[in-house]
Image (cartoon, rainbow, N blue to C red; front, side, top):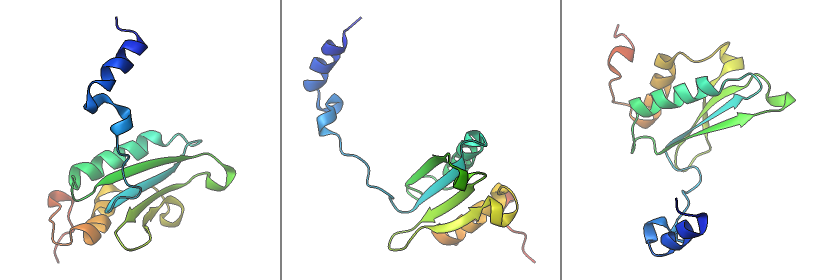
Amino acid sequence: MPSEQDNVEQAKGNPALDSSTFIPPAPLMSPSIIIEFCDRCQWLHRATWVSTELFLTFPPPVLKAISIIPLNSEETGGRFRVWLNLEGSLPQLMWDRKIEGGFPELKGLKQRIRDHVQPGKSLGHSDKKSE
């Protein structure tokens, strides 16, 4: 089994493995989603499920990034917020569990996000019924 030093030496000879050549992602790429959640409430699984569903509905390049931010303080207790970041503006609140009275149903959350990032996109069975 190669040692850590062997791996470092091998990486230096291969630019794809040389971390000194890596370029970090730009912060708050646009459009992107930020999901804040209360870690003390153990809502990580819900946050990752929402992020997966959003990426399946709005794959890159429609959404370029989804950030999941665990929060663990008294003032953030019970928080579950979904933000949409669009270029040239501050992030817009798409969902707040406390304001809305519960967690988002994905149908409604997807519709809200769609109306900003792809207004003409049909969400199929998750779309609003025409009247």
